[in-house]
Amino acid sequence: MFDSEAPYTLRSIQEMLGISRGVITQLIQAGFVLPRRGPRNEYRFGFRDIVLLRTAYALRAADIAPRKIIASLRRLKASLPEELPLTGLRITAVGDRVAVREGARQWEADSGQLLMDFEISPASGSVTVLERTDPVTGQHEREDPDELLALGVALEERDKEAAEAAYRRAIDVAPDRPDAYLNLGAMLCEAGRCDEAVALYDRAVDRCPDEPLVHFNRAIAFEDRGRFEESLASYERCLHLAPKLADAHYNLASLWEQLGNPQKALRHLSAYRRLQR
Image 1 (cartoon, rainbow, N blue to C red):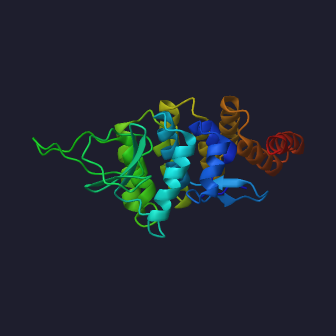
Image 2: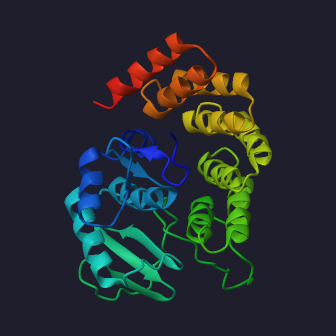
Image 3: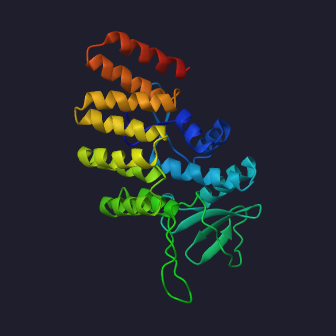
């Protein structure tokens, strides 16, 4: 029903990030993003994919042409080791160029040419965090929630405790932004800590009441705990905010069938099928 490691459809990614279907498809064809395939052969995206897609979105927002984004990321992927080294790597726009920074080294993605030192503005496309200190005071600069989020994503597979700490810090720094709640909540549920996930999503609903995916993930956590009435209400709130979110219709259909209401189950299953055409 719901793949916790690849919870997002192509449609929900488009709605969430505002990236066109064409750009996403080209990134997939270039091998820079490797989504799974769902039961109907549809693309399914995980959190790491979102970090990479957000990079493309940030470059596009900086007025980098889609063709240049694709070409730059393709060349970058070809120049990197087999396993993408997320730690310490940042991708950003400098003028009309796509620049990459790893530690003290900075180079242009297109040509590989080293760049002179420049001030890199925090961008939502950062792939992970670089720890920075003020050269005068020696104190840490203000943490960037996008970098903390990306650090959590990069750490999830090898150090879940550190990933959780990064997500919680991202929430502390920017409590009105939903991404870290979503990532951490999914990770908690996957670890069997659904009560903690529900509490986290309750906090997220207070701070991000109009984010449909917060209500969607909260509904899943309620369902896992057997709190079906609350789960139904959260799915309905999700669909009120995002009527075309196919996965919410599918999960509601399954839940209504489980609760013995085939008429409502069929209505949501029909809506799911229409959205998948």
